[in-house]
Image (cartoon, rainbow, N blue to C red):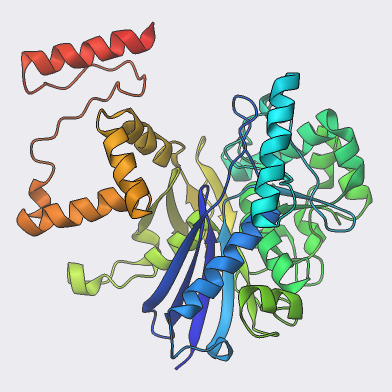
Length: 444
């Protein structure tokens, strides 16, 4: 029996799973990762911390399986959020952080905390070299790019999103010129993980096509660079990327799942607890990896018939929710991301509408609930996340009640996150008054 490892990096944690050749998940481990939020709408992470936590989860997942030795792992793949990783010319992290000027007391306290952390962990200080997908610092650059109405924007729903990489690159050039000059690579997080594992800078058609304005259908086997638009970069003020042959943003772009180089390097294999040379495939953005698995599911057992691939839609939920559909033809829908060619399955175009805030709103609901402190205390005692504790509680409840009845007496308050919508009927006058009072207080 052969076994395979998948590594997923979300917004708040890394997860590693091991499955057999028939797709059965045998083991999985999760490690939380930190996010730096120095200013409103600024969100940063560390590529070094992510890799370290991923390696820890990999070894822990392997340790759970006595009969699965590292040499039986026949391949590894990565997916991650579409966050921007910045490395220098020696492939070391460069800080992208814009910390607010601290007071003298805050500065001393921070130094003390960092020193204590280093003493306990034996690790170096954190370098925040990732601008997360949810970071909105580049709002001015986004507006400027969209005002050009360039042809490449046609393939991303008519306008670039603030979550995509070209506005972030332009922001870096303007606001962190020393970082721009020292930089050696700008990478999507998925591609960084594959690079860290193999030592080969091979980009994915999924990451570059969906988030970097790369057009895979215009490239060819002998010239990946043909998928980039020199005119677009020149017009937005990033023409040096063209002049250097797209070296910093990727001049080798391959199909999803293609083997990269000679597989795991000796160093990466030791860190992951695997064998040197283990094959590594070109990865995907996390939502698209989920869509690949979901859209390929068998439907006959549940629906009595097979649903054609082009009649399916995958809803992939996490911090956000992505609705992903495939088509043999390119369809242009204003406001809907895409069409992206080869972003999930070769030969298919992807359309991707969605909802930006899903997990974040769920977290808000949990943390604003009156019972949050009690649940948090219980989770800390059991050394587990609040969400794992609540999921276990739901499983216990479903043992005594039909799952369909768990929500029977629940009422929704659509304005709880600030939307100006009418309230649904409350269960009583007192409930309505309490909800309205809470809303009035929140708006003060």
